Length: 396
Image (cartoon, rainbow, N blue to C red):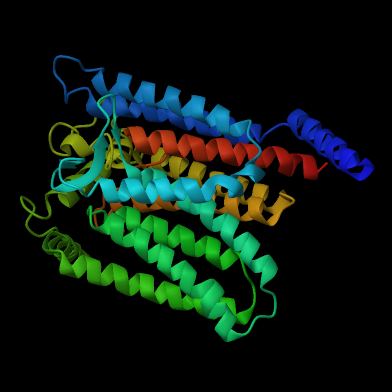
């Protein structure tokens, strides 16, 4: 009884210390500033889309950000160490939603892709939710698994580690690929592999990680080749790399052509806020979502683009510093995974918008228009800030 009371008192004391600790304010204010800038860019790149209401997407994105901030606050006040107890349920719900979205009559189809569930008030995109739930599940599972499987042999490693990870990753990847959404599949696959790699250090684990990387690369190549529209897009990009010119600029190369025109028109300092020309029907509905960086490059030029890219690098730096200071294995893996996910998605978006990789439908974190993506990324921010509180406390 006495020992039990001492344990309870110790937990209460630790909880009070954590509550008094402060989060990474630099990271918080940086992302808030990024979100305000993103809101302005959503307006700039969308006001000509709805003629009767130029503020339509601006107001909707404002609502998404407010909802995201509310969710961010709620997860911020919850100790992240509680997540492993319930995350299996969360991942199960995410997988169920991924299955439901594929059922005719439930999933909502836009431009040939069935990725959303119409909830009347907003469209839920289960794959965005899965990015977060699978990341938390993986961080919880690997942190526990690695602490219990020291000096294991190859057979145990395969049965208890490598095969279970490949199985769950394959299941989720196939469900998202069927929507189809290769870009999100790639982000989840690469982020998961990064967390898996960070969870172990022995040579067997490194070999397993390399093996999974090869599988992911082959999986991506086959997925790109087997789908005719993806194959045409990749082939157009290949020709662009070889010749320096966009083939079929009115067909498969239309989007790439207009992206490059937007970026090239920006010059050193840009044409000015709101003055982008490529958003006028050339980039269409993607100007404020998948191609918003191209509009930013046109309006703010090379200097503005470099500043924005540097901010994402700094977010990566701050996030990894949090992971370095956090006292427990789960917190280190989770914080690393969150910041890798955010920056990986940002750099893939930027790369697609400057011709470094084929055109993909990836939103720019904290900037692109989108309900599910905005809310989910703010929830991830709330978790990261909660972890930073305990990282700051541990550093005192």
